[in-house]
Image 1 (tube, rainbow, N blue to C red):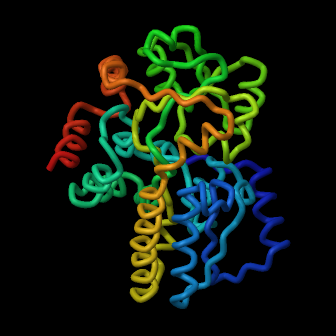
Image 2: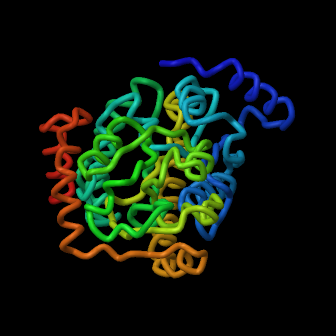
Amino acid sequence: MKHFSLGGMALFAALAIAQPVSAQTVKVALDSPPDAENSGSYIWAHAFVEHLNANGMKAQEFQRGALGNEAERLDQVASGLLEVSMSALKSAGTLDKYIFGLYLPYFFKDMAEVDKALYEGGMLAKINAGTTPKGVRVLGVDSVGLGAGIFNTKHPVKTIADMSDLRMRALDESQIELYKAWGANGTVVSWAEVPNALQTGVAHGYLNPPFVPMMFGHTKFIKHFTDARINPSLRIAIASESWYKGLSAEHRKVVDDAVVVANKANRDWLAARSGILAKLEAAGVAVVKLSEEERAKFKAASKPAYTNGLLTPEQIAEWTKAKDM
């Protein structure tokens, strides 16, 4: 386990001094602006916090970045310094790769299929079997919007051939390999550096759900979106395992019930996202609906991502069985 930076420790200590938070307060670190209209992650976090507060457990939301970056929050959760963090899937993936089944392109049809695999198929329990020994429990998986598509600053992407002159912002090396499979190039860029990368041409675009450029102010330079429905757009809520296990049976039930409430609030929010593409167009981003023929080409080209070393063939088979059961 990496230790979070001295800067992160100082930030955490300063925050604790500046904001009186009792030892009983459940701190929930947000990973997006507190936007109840556009942020599915915030919907989940807010419903979770509200349920705790309504049932005898004091809880408080902390603004995005207030308790550190992704890596720092992961370390704080694992160390028991932070109770709950809204985080990226890859945070849990650094502890155990099982969760990367949720990354596979064109694998899940929709969020209902994700939920089926996680809960009926038992995959959330298998994820936690790998992460809880390292101090982190995945409480839930939240949707942050409609399926991920292709944003770029240069031109419409109507076919896979249109990717050839694009250099895309990547989360990690596995996403760079996906871009290569599509005939494009990729470069790893931190989220904080994305606006500058897009404006200077270091990167020409990224993969994200439709709401992202509007929430983060990128519509000034992002002008094209292809509704490619690559995979469900997901984040996770992680909790300190030492905190969770240290709860009384009564309080643990409150937390478990809060997860159920938060999941429902998030899924209800997702069901109302049908008008998001029109909002994107109104913000000045041209939307391309990928044809089924071209989507099939993207899907076929993406197959190498299933064997790039993130998961074993046996693990992929387990994910397949869980979603298709």
